[in-house]
Amino acid sequence: MNWEIMLKLVLAMVFGGIIGLEREIGNRPAGFRTHTLVCMGATLVMMTSSFLLKVYPDASDPSRLGAQVISGIGFLGAGTILKDGSRVRGLTTAASLWAVSCIGLAIGAG
Image (cartoon, rainbow, N blue to C red; front, top):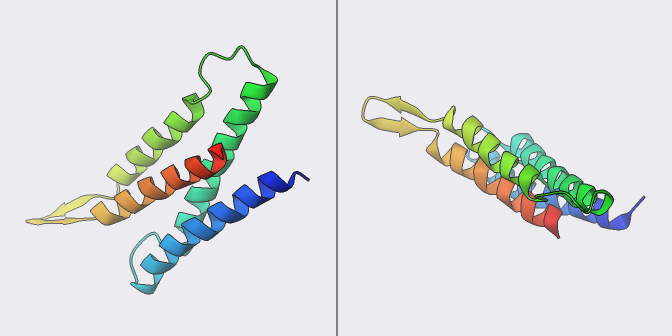
C-alpha cells in the first residue's frame, strides 16, 4: 500500500473530523460523519484525478474531477438552505460542507 495515499486519507479524516466534531458538539446538522466523509471523498476524487493524469498524460484537463466536486457539493449545500419567514437556515451547514470539500481537494492534490 502506498503510504502517501494513506497519509492523505488520514489527514482528510482528521481535518474533516475536526470541523464536523465542532458542529456535532453544537448539535448542528451535518456533523462528524458527514464532514469526514465529504473531506475523504473529495481527497479520493483528487487523488484519482492525479492518477488518471499519470496514466493518461494526454488528458485535456486534470482538474475536471475536482471541479465536479465543488459544483456537486455546492448543489447539495444549496438544498440545505431554507428560508423560514425572515430567517435563513442551513447556510452555515452548506458553507462548511463546501469548505470541507475544498480542504479535501487540497489534501488530495498534495
